[in-house]
Image 1 (cartoon, rainbow, N blue to C red):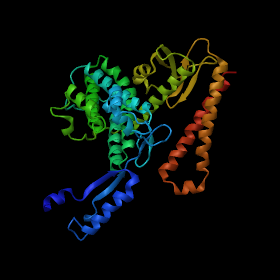
Image 2 (image 1 turned 90 degrees about the horizontal axis):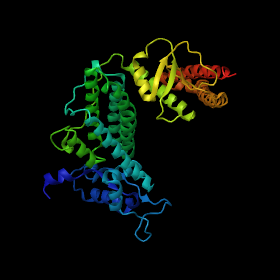
Image 3 (image 1 turned 60 degrees about the horizontal axis):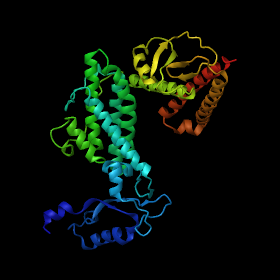
Image 4 (image 1 turned 180 degrees about the vertical axis):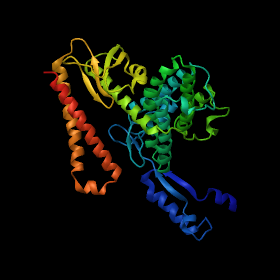
Length: 416
């Protein structure tokens, strides 16, 4: 072998293997490299055949047995591909395969991979319904809604976390982060919130929401491509996001969010999402179907949140959300304490006993959280050694939990 070729391929960067052959293969390769010194260098590190060793786990059946032909406990991959797709099989396995640890195979995990592919396809189709996509979308910071700011900030965080995961060969962590971002941050929250602008009368804001969709979809397809190459290639072409194959596209870069109030906006959106989740929980506990329109009242001081009420109503699937700082609720009306204020689910014939039971459970939960925070703050070692920001965060949580507890007890008292 000529010198140029040897230097190109030796040493390699990483060896991928199973841990059961460390002594029989991995160790002997290293020994041979140090003995015969194919790197033609005095430095040992130039003669060891690889820099890193990535250990894969074994896929076992539900009983923990190693899959083998003799046991007949190994599913045919071609059958799985026929049922769930090649991308579904790849993604389902990658999400549950921590480095060096065996995994127990369950078809439900592969089904989740197929469901994720379906979710991705439907999200792309929704974007396609509203006009052609832009291959190079322009983000105008002045027109961004707080929901767009949040999803772009979360995309930036996802890119950072993926870089860290790849450096540590934590492919299952990378897969889970991709899943969480797209399913929750993008589909469940941003797309639903953006419908207010997409179906609204303000054309510039409609275009801004669609541009954000194009930007996120373009970036996400590139991030997901190593895990699900087939569907990402198809959607890349279908949406017209690039002239060439997605495999030749440059990695996505983080978007610059030029906003002096970025932290405040993200704090507000966090409070909105918390309130929406609390409202959904109230609906579920009252056994009101998610498809049925309901009415909510938000008792909150000031009108800061007023511009976001239509979107909050959409996220809650509410007929209306009224801001009423002086609202006097009837006894038994379900209420949730949120960072925005008290959120009431207005229903006829409220069950005071059921609401009392729910409030008691919520009070017990908050009291437990408060005790945990207070025990840490009472620990002198924690206060002295923990970073100042962490201690301050615990003090803020103590204050928030105390205020929340007082409001819950007041609501319980109002039932009598």
